Length: 447
Image 1 (tube, one colour):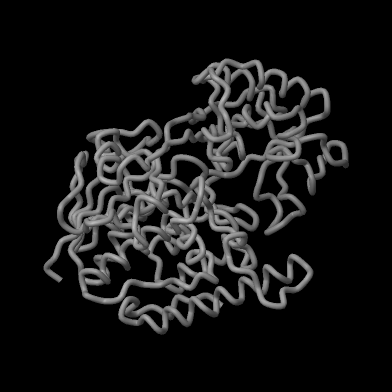
Image 2: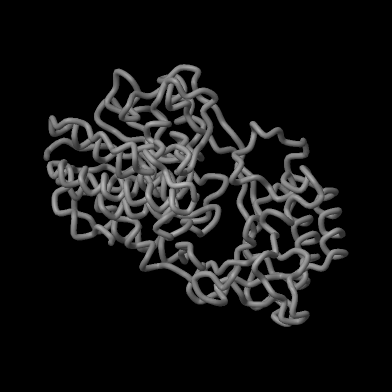
């Protein structure tokens, strides 16, 4: 195909989109602003860099996140197999070695003969076929161009990332290796146990610590899945003990009993030389992070390889600003990834794949793909493109978006299992029906 498609942004969505289009014979010009223009959260110029957690969520087949991974496998997703190759132990979740994963995606993109990589900041919308996958951290100039194109339906919210500490600086006489309920194999997490007095002192210090952005945030300012730990603690003294620090399913080997609270650490790489403080997205200043987080038992001498950061994440009011294919009305430009409000790493990958399918269909004169709404991706797309959606906010895939079952079982586990089975059946049928969009897929469909 002689037509060239401009893809803006080499994050998860942009990289997936570029590879999918190129695999279908479409020439791609992939624009990435780094390292010419760095974002507030990125650290490298590599593609698909994960700036928050390194977890791509659950792989369990009866969960919404697990179903989404299956659906992407059925559609021939390019990035998920790379994530699986770069995985690190994380219980029932898919977590990756950030550097290995980013390198793998970069190499896959750079080596494709139909993809041209251009290192530059894009400040305007192309008149030709294009996909803007600049992410929630797109430059001010590009976001302004998008805002002008879609009207005043653009919004922004704040997001935060958790700190990472050196493994050798963790006191292993205190921190113990165990997954909650030993789920998915023992020892995938390190746990820093807290007694009641330690927890009380930690929460008091957390609430009184200096913040980068000093004002208290209202719920509407923050995406709930990335609430800073101090903002969650502000809602109640025990709130984080029943959230990120819940000790349920853990046994402190020093005492033989469940601790009052526990901070979990997840490996950042296959060598386990670095650990992420799970759920510790934060807005604290760096000196305060050192002071307060070193109060956690086992982290008194913690060496911080990366401090937590807080930054603006921007997104578009997709249901009211874009059409059913996530295109800006009257243009040949589509948006993809978290800038559309489809929140989450795997959701961003899925959005990039869908943008490629819609763009390929337009270029080839094929009907646009109509994903089954009984699935996780189809139901998320339906939510994000439905003009009746009110108060649009970033959304992960979840079973609450999926149409209910007929004669639904009473037990929640049975309902979820049936919904997952229906989603897989309907997606497999969709892929088979639309072979014009999915040449060569099918062998990758998981059982």
